[in-house]
Image (cartoon, rainbow, N blue to C red; front, side):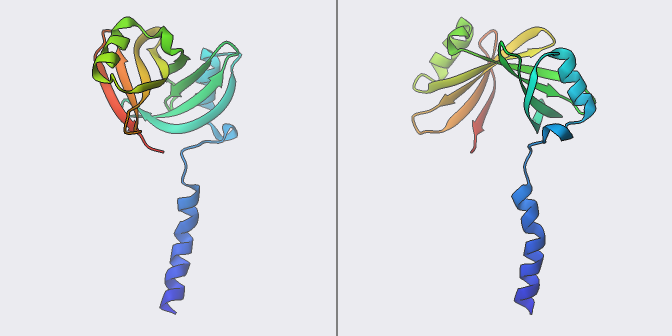
Length: 155
C-alpha cells in the first residue's frame, strides 16, 4: 500500500517535470509582448518564444525573421524591449572583440555571434565558442574588447 501511495504521489509530479519548459506557444505570448515585437519589426514573422532572464530581469525572448535577418527580441512582461540580438557573421565582429577572443580563447573554435543592442545602439557581441575540451561557452565582449559575461551552455 505504501509503495502504491508513493508511486501515486510520484505520478502527480511526473507530468510537471516532463512539461517543465521555458517555451511559450506563440498563441500564448502576452499581448504586450507581441505588440512590442510588432512595433519594432512590423513585417517580421514570429518563430518562437521562451521565458528567460536578461540582466536579472524576467523577459520573453521572441525569435523573429524579418526576411533580411533573424533576431531575438527580449521583451519584459510589461512590453518594454530590453534588448535585441541580431545574428551576424563571425567576420563582422569588430577588431577589439576578435583581439580579445584571440587572446583569451586562442584554442577555442568560434561557432556563432550575436550583435547586442539596446534601442538603436550596439553595445556588445555574444560569441559562442567551443573549447578543446568540448565545452560550449557564450562570451559577451563589449565594443572596447572587455569581456562582460561568460556563461557555459548546458544542453
